[in-house]
Length: 198
Image 1 (cartoon, rainbow, N blue to C red):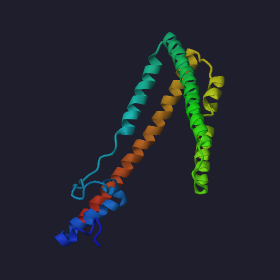
Image 2 (image 1 turned 180 degrees about the vertical axis):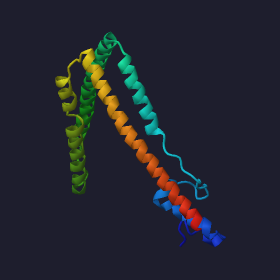
Image 3 (image 1 turned 135 degrees about the vertical axis):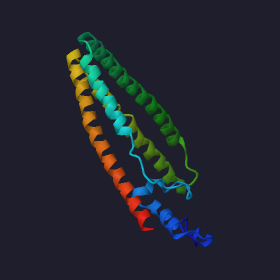
Image 4 (image 1 turned 90 degrees about the horizontal axis):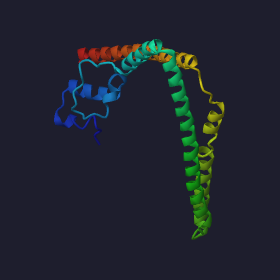
């Protein structure tokens, strides 16, 4: 029985096209494995620009933070604090709502009488699934603990915290873009060598 790669041999595919088709299963162009078989393989891949864009945004953010007036930093620190408090309160409320829904379903499971002994395992499975979900989804501990630890920052603290985050992003995305460029160069070399050999 032919595979997705060999089905076209009977139609008279050339060695070159067969090799290029099979190459989709390998590292350099594996991202094309789900593309249509006749999708052309580019002569050259371009590196993703995601990290480059994120690097630019983080660099701009550093400049904006440095230029902010102290009063503006204080206002932003207060706004961020209030936003975080609200986020955690919303999370606690969401957990409580979900827990109520789980408990209502659990009550229905407990009230259900399985039609035969063969169905007892299903009831136990449903009960266990809900109990596990309540334990993992509805604890609310994350949000409650975060609220206890949350404290307002001064404008100066807020600016430094935001600068630290942005500088970490710059470091991370600089490294990521360098790695992406290296991966793309290796992919391009691999496909170039393949094309030259066939």
